[in-house]
Length: 157
Image (cartoon, rainbow, N blue to C red; front, side, top):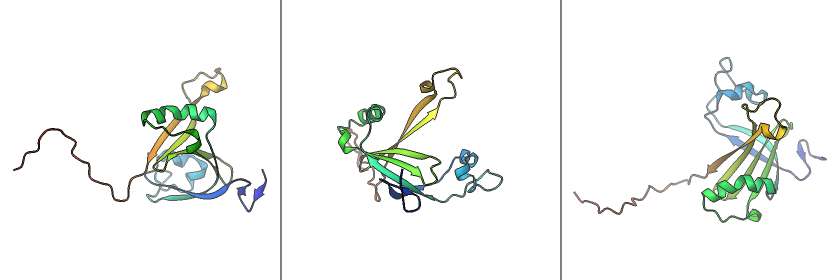
């Protein structure tokens, strides 16, 4: 990859990703976040963390659409591949990143492959990975109170 500027690579844009508390204490065991920990690595201050990221956007790949299919089905979504934005996000020091999908203007899905600790050591490499999908929904700035959808007549007192 060719560099553009200091840490942004060709084809990427510079974004700021904001992480909001509460933070899991397991973050203190990761080199990237450990410096933010206090009290012998038992506490991360309760304030947002801003992190610069290099981001490349595209449409989802075939296998990613397979992973997203249950999410789309559960939402009765008719969203097509061409309308989903894939965000490949990378830390500038290239120590890791995130893969996220904007399903619509109010729904973001984080696609996180993880090692499955229950797989035997002699298993095929593809069996070691499980995919976790986290769904984030936008909360309106002024949410409307829930509407009473009961069909029972209301009593006036």
